Image (cartoon, rainbow, N blue to C red; front, side):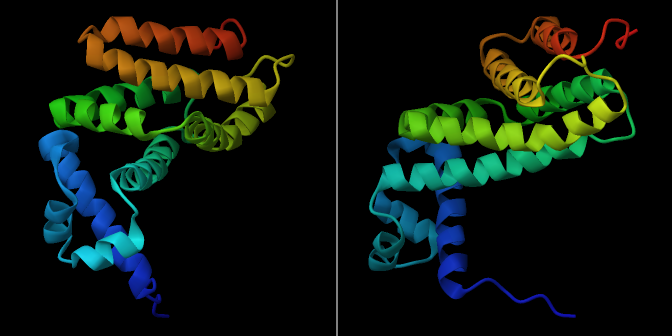
Length: 196
């Protein structure tokens, strides 16, 4: 069975978003909308049919990045390993990804932070929470989570811890320091002895 392609308008918007992400990594927010149109292979008119300006573009880049990031998280929170092993594997993979991206990742996070409203940040946190919840439910069934902790609380703790650790990587190359955050999150939701 053949999978249908997304509509042309959706494909064009995605091409513009990807071109914007590439320019953002290369030059920060210094690129012009004309440069973006050229990079995306569309006319200026087509560009403004999809995005009213750079802020709207940055928000779209943020949504795309968050969706990919949630898929990335899901990949490392599998059901075949203990909770702490899954979390530490996740954070170690983030460290590796950060080393590969280098300075461009910092530019991206700075630009997205400037573009985001508090409402958008809340949506991002909810996306992380939704990603963690299925795994937390499984761990709860396996009695690997404190019985008296609410899953939504655990999910928010893990998502905010993850965000904090990622931003810490920008300020310090000390792996032990951000892994301390992982241990802290684990100790808050996992029964004592689960990390032995």
